[in-house]
Amino acid sequence: MARVLVVDDDDDVQAVLGQYLAHDGHDVVAARSGDQALGALDDPPDVMLLDLTLPDLDGLEVLRRLRSRRMDLPVLVLSARGEEADRLLGLGLGADDYVVKPFSPREICLRVAALLRRRASPLADRTSPAPYIFRWRSIEIRPTEHRVLADGNEVSVTPREFDLLLLFVRHPQQVFSRQSILAALWPEGYVSDHVVDVHLASLRRKLGETLHLESVRGVGFRLGGDA
Image (tube, rainbow, N blue to C red; front, top):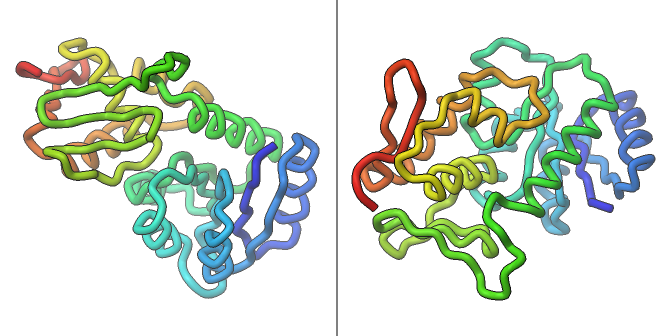
């Protein structure tokens, strides 16, 4: 069972999602404004479902403030804004998934389950009694702690960025196409391959030249140079 925070001022959405998520065994918490959503972080949920149109704070502002406090909380955006620019903006601000209204409640439950699986089981093997630490140049990834350090300084990354970085660092020099990245990190589907570019651009911005993430024209992306 997980604690799911549903942030939406629509009573019908709250009722339907609450019913479906509770049927899956989750503890559902409702927030009907941005202020209520941020206040609910004092007792952190395991997943947040976030509508972008709220009566006080815009949902994107809620997402910005959330990510300034918590990078590890999976966020699924629910929005009537279906243009690609809106989806990419939400994902670029740190959302882990984006669903356009109207949606299937059953699909939302499946996406919540996928986010919970990804949070509980990062790509590195966590069964070893000794914690794995992956290194690439001056970048250090600690999967069991879900932390990224560069030159000894902690770098805030979203859960999706963490998994994407770990995928490349575990397979240096291997070229990954957009479709192979989507298959590995978004197995639930339903996302544009431009999502990959948004997350890669964010990692490049946060980690700079140390990452040395190369675009292989017509093929995909890889970590270049020597570790």
